[in-house]
Each structure stands twice: as structure tokens, then as C-alpha cells.
Amino acid sequence: MDLILFSNDDDASLNILNNLKNLVNFEYLGKFENNEYYKFNKFYVIIIDQEKVRAENIDIKIKNSLSINFENIIVASKHRSESGMRSLTVHPIGNFGRADLGGKDKTLVSVNANYMTGALLKLNEIGKDINYNISYEATHHGPYLSTPTFFIEIGSNYEEWNDQNSGKIIAETIIKTEKTNDEIAIGIGGGHYTPRFTKLALTKKISFGHMAPKYAAEKIDLEMLLQMKEKCNAKYLIMEKKDLSGKERKRIEDLLDQAGLELIDSDSLPDRP
Image (cartoon, rainbow, N blue to C red; front, top):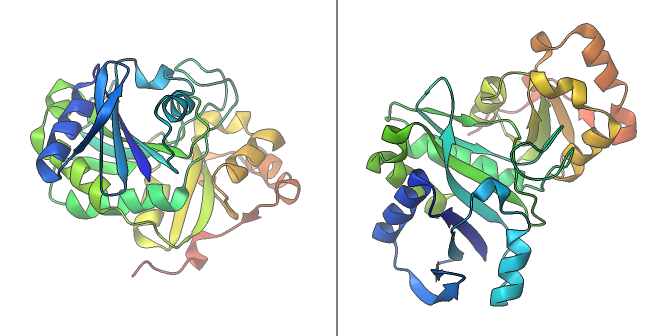
């Protein structure tokens, strides 16, 4: 079983939830805190009242309170950006530096990279005709959880959060996602929306786990590189070289042997069928 987490303080989250209710039959199981919870197919559905990025250890609380178990968490959420770009995104969570938006300082949360990339592929397939940017986002924000987790989001303003079409696309994506069987890489470099890593995942047989954008590259020491690797079971590192100085690239490359990672050239990856 997996868990889909929603929250009452989030228009996009409730939009996705309502569309999910229209697509599948929920089985009522009881209440968690103030809200009903359900299951369908291989999913539990839980709604919380608190802000999701600060719902520290909510997975442990749910498991202990309800005596249920789940292997992964998908968090249905809004995405906010100053640019206002219309977007549908998936991303892992954690902090490369200070935990200003939940979680713990310099701590990443595990993610099933094949599951998250499967969601990106399905989102791109179902949403190919919608006027939204579809992509990964780099690893960011909380909460801190012990269960492998990724967020799936609608951005970036009130209009998009309440767009029933985008809510339906994400609901269908959650239902229909299949895990890839790709090798797994971490990524370093590029912008927050990781355009190169997104393009690679859509066109090549590679699944990305944790991704550090160029603005976080200076925070990648051996300890953080090991976290990036271990918390998504990565074998490879792919760097967006043109966004990193030669000195920065060499500093990271010098850590790879100790981290047990292989730097790979994306040109060597097989095409996705």
C-alpha cells in the first residue's frame, strides 16, 4: 500500500482530491484526527489540517495512530512561484542547507526515484495537450519523514490551483503511474525546474532521485553527496556542467570515489522506448 496525503489548507490539494473521488470508489475506513480517511486500490487517502511542509513525522503518527503500513507517500499540493508559471511538477523533499520551510537542516528525505519518474512520465503523457510546464523540481522543503516521499503539484496561482482540468490530470496520473525499471541518478546543477534532467528522464532510460540546483551546489560536500545517493539508491551522478564552474565541478568529482557514485555522460544513456 501507498499513501496519498492531502491537506485542507490547500486549494490545489483539495482540487486533486475531489477529482480523485470522481474517478475511483473510496472505501471509508474511519477518522484520522478531524478528517475521514479512505482507501482505494493500493492507496490509503488521508487528509490533514496542518501545513504539509511542516507536518514533521506525520507518517509515523499516521502509522501508530491507525495501525496501518505503507511503502511510499505521494503528497498532492499546490506550487507557488513568483514567476507565476503554470506548472505541473513532481519533486523529492529535503534541505541542502537551512530548513526554512520545514524538515531538518542539511537533511534529505528518501524517495523512490523510479516511482517519482514514472509519475513524471505519466504526467507528461496525460497532460501533453495542456498549457502547463511539466517537469521535475529540484529537492526542496519539508517535512521530515521516514517514508520515501515525493510531492506532485499544481502551480503557481489561485487560478491554476482551482483548474479542474489540471486537478483531473494529476488525479489520473496518481492512479495510472507505473514505476520505471531505469538505473537511478542524482543530478547537480541547472535551475530549480531542472529542464535538462527533466528532458533526460523523458527521453532517456534514466530516473532521477535527488537533484541539487546550481544555487545549492556549494552545499554539496561528501556527507550531502552520500545522502543524495543513499536516499534514492542512486548509482550515477549527472551534472549540468555549463552551470557550474570548473573549480566547482572538480571539487564534486573528487568526492565521487568516496561516495561510490559514477559520473555518467548523458549521451551514453539508451533512448526511452
